[in-house]
Image 1: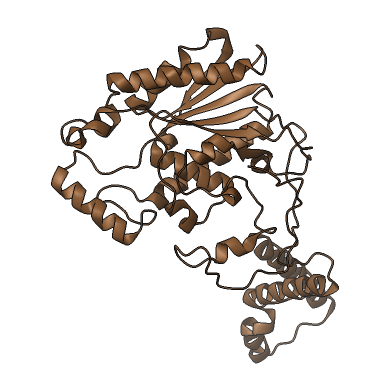
Image 2 (image 1 turned 60 degrees about the horizontal axis):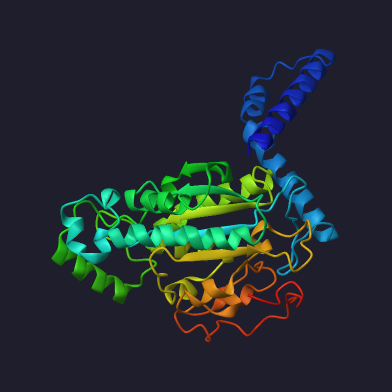
Amino acid sequence: REWTMARARAISASTTTTRGRRARATPRRRSTTTTRRAAVDPRTSGEAFVRDAVRDENRAADAVRGAGSDHFLVGEPTYTYGSTTRKLPRRIVLVRHGESEGNVDESEYTRTPDSQVRLTARGHEQAESTGRELRDMMDADGDNYKLFFYISPYRRSKETAIGIAKAFSGRQILGVREEPQLREQDFGNFQDYERKQAEKLERHRFGRFFYRFPNGESGADVYDRITMFSDHMVRDIDAGRFPEDANMILCTHGLTLRLFLMRWFHWTVAEYERIANPSNSQPIILERRDSISIEASMHTKECYVLAQESKEGLSGCSDDMCTMILPEECWSRALQLGPDVNHSLLPPPAVPKPSAERFDEC
């Protein structure tokens, strides 16, 4: 619009200059009636020039579409992915915090701010055990690997990250970044126990994704901030800011972890709502696809697959939810109605299917 207005002003100025030159070359008429009419003639007003400029732009756009030089069809992508600077980390590891005092006794939230709830002694043991498990897995890759931590600012997530980091040497840790977007869903401030239990029952009837707790967040709200976080992380990966032997460790919370997976793999709301939280401190691992040739044009999220053991740790997760499939290749998933994922709004469209070698395993 700004460009169109600027163009209209330029045309107006040019026309005014031309009229001035003609006026100097032609004897001026004395008729005041003609002068008054010219002053209000809509054909020479500024609004007319704007209208004409918009009309010309629309005609030009219609001509381009009519020529078929750049028009878009469903199932026909007009964009490319990937980056020449991209370096793909070896793994992305999501870890729900270890057992917390709030997991053992929900009344803890009535007297302690959610962000300050601590791990139990068992939770500390779980975190350290997870660290040793991850170290054994990464040692199998060689001894040149690195770790980069993204952590929720909540105390129980930080304590979990500390327990995991104990299994590694300082030189193996590239860095640690506190990321508020990875925090727990906001349930309100100090919680009234009886009221919160009633709200959770109401959430079950209303739907876990869309239900918003009074003075808190809905799952959809958390999804929005997780979208921002994952987009930033992908941009960092595409910019080559992490070495290819790096392992990204995200210490977060159960619902936040599931919403990260929903955003990464493009799950539908119905698919998300059938997934249960993983156990405390259980690593959920996204493996880089080293078994296939990763093309430079592939989206960064396409280059990772949910490990089989991790899939088994997410009750309700199916094989087709273990990879990110571009919407132009499988857009019928978005047309499922409600929790019945077998009931589709339309029959499966005749669109290109993912090749077997790109999506052959979970």
